[in-house]
Amino acid sequence: MTSLLERLARWTRAVPRALRRIGLLRPLAPDQWLDGDFEHQHRELGYKLFIPARGAGRPRPLLLMLHGCSQDPEDFATGTRMNHVAAELGFLVLYPAQTQKANAGKCWNWFLPQHQQAARGEPALLAALTQAVMQEHGADPARVCVAGLSAGGSMADILGRTHPELFAAVGVHSGLPSGAARDLLSALGAMKNGPGKASGGEVLRPTIVFHGDADETVHPRNGEQVAADAVAGLLAGGDHPPAHEMRGRSEGGRAFTRRTHADARGAVMVEHWLLHGGGHAWAGGSADGSFTDPTGPDASAEMLRFFLSHPMIERTRVR
Image: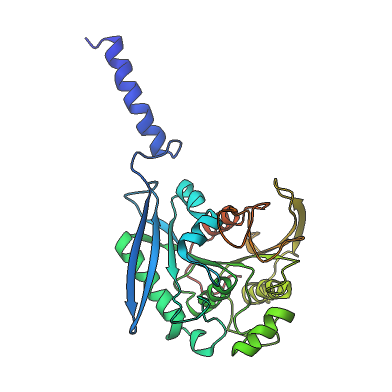
């Protein structure tokens, strides 16, 4: 006959396992922070990859994170605190590193025509890297997303347009819309004054935008245009409700306006967060990294929340 002590011992072993299965306790295995190298079309690219312990053994979401000028993966991960949020939600996070050989300021070359096309340049390189990591680490192909800051945000917008079959949703923080520039001179003009009428192709994926209205590096009109392009591409001609606007203040004291655009089913397809008094910095980040605004709101958490609500769908257009 099983004693009470034996039954209690089995119960205390079983409960933690059950709680881990439903996500209430952290798994026993540690998170991983790996280095890697990748080559495509005669160009090499280094990267860092965050692999959370949570979700091991099943396909996990993957986020491609593109740093801004002068940054690197370590700095970007530290400043955005994205790995901290990803560990809780079970996201793989891939951080490619731009080289000074490709750009003296370590910026992604979003402003050059050869890097605004699907089959060549940096879009082709970054898409191929993403696919290689997906295959190696068993990522969920329905939950692959891309986000970035500044030049990285601009390249994220390009990738969402050039590779809608790969990326389910896009996050643009303090970036410019695809097609805003064709060379360095027009890039500087768009950064200072906002984009012109150039178009970088139709937006076919849900998009979340963060931009400070006091950004003196990339004019906030660029964030407005990223959101407007997404609304035009995703909701044009559809029977959908009017935009909803909400004003709030983060725990750190940063006031913001959040404007959302939903489709006919009520699903929010586009979010635009305007950060009042915010400069050229990742909202809700850590002061231990560069270009961060710790006063919030938490752009990393909001982006992952948005991405999880938008798995890949078969249709190329959302109505």
